[in-house]
Amino acid sequence: MLENIASPSDIKHLSKEDKKALSEEIRNALLDIVSETGGHLASNLGSVELTIALHSVFDTPKDKIIFDVGHQAYAHKMLTGRFGKMRTIRTKGGLSGFPRREESEHDANCAGHASDSISLALGMARAMQLKKEDRSVVCVVGDGALTGGMCYEALNDAGNTKTPMIIVLNDNAMSISSNVGAMSRHLTKMRQSNTYRQMKQKIRRMLEKIPGMGMPVMRVLSKIKDLLKSLLINDMFFDAMGIEYIGPVDGHDIEEMERVFERAKQYDEPVLIHVVTKKGRGYTLAEDEPEHYHGVQPFDTQSGEAKKAGGKSAGAIAVNALIKLAQRDPRIVAVSAAMLKGTGLDQFQKAYPERTFDVGIAEEHAVTMAAGLALGGMKPYVALYSTFLQRSYDQVMMDVCLNNAPVTFLIDRAGLNGADGETHQGIFDIAYLKTIPNLIIASPCDTGELEGMLDVSLKCDKPMAIRYPKSLAKGVNDKKIEIGKWERISVGKDVQFIAAGRMVDIAREASEKLRKFGVTAGIVNARFVRPMDDNMLSEIMKENLPIVALEDGIVEGGMGEEIMRRMREMGFDQRIDLIGVPSAFIAHASVEEQTRDNLMDAESVCMRTLKALGKEIM
Image (cartoon, one colour):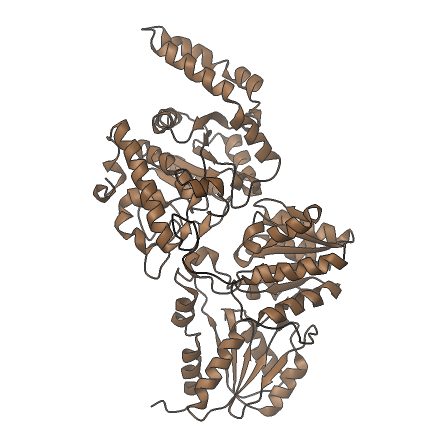
């Protein structure tokens, strides 16, 4: 059926049996495609029937369906005319792994981060109210996202003003890592209370069979439902916020969800529909290990093994070093925001469960709580992806750095970040962190230097950020590393490279290529972006060679601009060229393709350097 579905209107009149068959076809297609391309699997397998039910009742693009994060929208893409392109997902020029407005009129927003969907949906609902448009706004939010504070700000606002909107709570007991916190326990209690749901279904079915009297009686019974629910499942939390609650509903029963959605459309106030699904449904390996199959590389569907063996991530290497430090220093604690596995902190948790704090999808809270730990005499390490650390910028500034609290940030996935695209690029952290007083920013060029920086951080009594990509060149921890001191790798006669992080290796490769043109380049490893090595800059000034600064981040506001400012203030009048990422949202592709497309690869650096030197290129 999928090949014949050009838009959601093609599924609205399918029979119950056909929709059930369609759900299995989508599930098989998901498994087949994602096992080849990689991507988000378990969350998409779990939301198939939910997506069919939504598109059966609501009319996109007239109605708006907003997916929180958007990593569960693969079935939505298939039902909105994109099935034929699904094998291009997350590849250069292909479909995004998340909703994108420019990709389809059925995508209401560009998504990628969690917990913001209710706020966005509320804004759209208010716009429709002001324009007097008769349309529905539906927000699909996971239970994991409810660990994020924005959800409660939006629920409080919506409940206060009674703005009509529909919130579908997709409850699968998981985000990326297992959900944590009081709300997770509350939902578990509600989810496991079948008494209320079964009683409600039996009464409805019985009354529907009584001609003339059934529905009036149902209306009377609905007036006492709040009392019944409070006795059986204690769901008064949402009621207290002014949000009408319906559920729990079987998230794999299309017919039941359609009935509930049709009823919800008639409400003139915000309504939350609690839908219970199983993450990884239909694929035993994903059902048994939903965290492992949340986001996957290409894999064999029979064994579940990755088709291409990957080495240890830089995050795993950093955490292994942290575990060794924690053996001799009981002050060390680790903090995560629902990313234990992604950052490698799951291994720290196994070694030191009482010293590991996973606060859920709540980066702001994670950072401020870490500041409290530091001020209380502990040595906290906060491991976050670069793109998610952005969400806690104010807390880094006001709670950590203003207090000069010795918190160390392990910034994973820094720099260009590949197939997840615009929302997951780690290219902004240098620019947004280097303006904050008291913060040390380190950028190791290899795994050995990364381990060495962990050693340095333990003795540091100031806030420190160590940024590294997912993959980092192998190295040995045998260097003497001092805060603010750079490393001179080689001396050149024609041009001076100043590089940080993974760009050091690219500078080395570019230097080798330049030799073929008779050009020798000096290389400096700017392992500390802040503070900079002013002594080394003074030496470079005396050498009076053109400078090329290389960084794996945006040029605007980045390391290169700071080098240029300092050198000009010192009176340096030679040419300075800056190589890095343009100020733009970089679309999905491989890291290698993104590096090449932005003229940051060794060949491009070589050619750009020759051009800057005025050399003829034959």
